[in-house]
Amino acid sequence: MKSKKLLLTALTSLAFASGLTACGGGKADFKIGILQPVEHAALDAAQNGFKEGVKEKLGDKTVEFNYLNAMASDANMSLYASDLVDANDLNLGIGTGAALALKSASVTKGSTKPVLFTAVTDPVDAKLVSDKNAPEGFITGSSDMNPVVDQINLIQEVMPTVSKIGILYTQSEVNSKVQSDMAEAKITELGLTPVIRTCTNSADITSAAQALVDDGVQAIYIPTDNNIAANMGAVKTPANAAHVLVMCGEEGMIKSGGHLTLSINYFDLGKQAGIMAADILLKNKTIKETPVKYMTSAECTYVLSSKNLEAAQITIPDSVKTAHSWSDVDA
Image 1 (cartoon, rainbow, N blue to C red):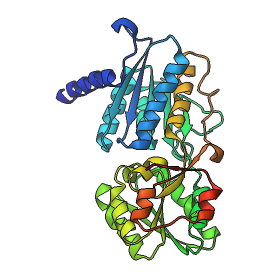
Image 2 (cartoon, rainbow, N blue to C red; image 1 turned 90 degrees about the vertical axis):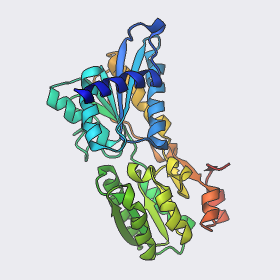
Image 3 (tube, rainbow, N blue to C red; image 1 turned 135 degrees about the horizontal axis):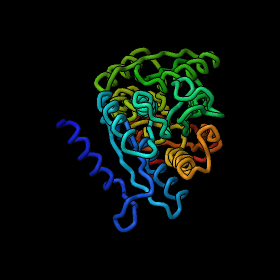
Image 4 (cartoon, rainbow, N blue to C red; image 1 turned 60 degrees about the horizontal axis):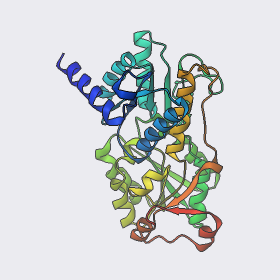
């Protein structure tokens, strides 16, 4: 009972913190729950984009957002998902784990309330949907499948003599395994040697990164991995000390320790899901009429950190600098 009271308090306070938009303090037209596994730049941006998309599409309708952060706890994720399903008209899961928790809670409770996801790499592989073009049931959303092949090509473009590329990801993150497999296949196709290391939590990221350095890799590829994204400093220290290039799956990881990427804009990604959610709430579209949204490589941005590159004593060739339009997170 005590935990339920605490959760109710959290839901109430976080709803106000995230922005209750019902006019005059009255009842909102819609209640939307947001479940996030952990706070870091990419997921925070997706959350803010989602809210923007919902508000923009709903027009004069009012909405109450109930946001919960599981703080990297699977137990919290399950508990919060269950309560959000009960409390809201529609729920958003940010990341694969959150989306799966909301799906599981919905099935357990016999609920068919809409569940949207964002920042999910492969919703079919994760068993959130069976058909990304015409989702069945009550789930759809926007995918953050990043341009893995182009990112691996970029490593070789920056380091033409690279021969061995490490891949680092968290074992429990399905989205990361999908990207790791894609990266490994591309590295092999290029005639280079892939070296894969995994971690289980935040505590062993540094040792896994150091193991890659000890293996003699010249570059490390990190997918859009929530655990590592929230702890990029654990990779930065061993990589910079050995002058190893760190290619990340998205821009937020560059700001906190990586070197460069070709990145999806997570605010825009979340906004896509927000527009989809509003359409469903307004009954303009059904779930089946709302295919999973993907961002193209052309919609991505070349991003680097001049400070992190300097700290690692890595120089990008002038030909690469002029070949692309770069955004410097330190500018």
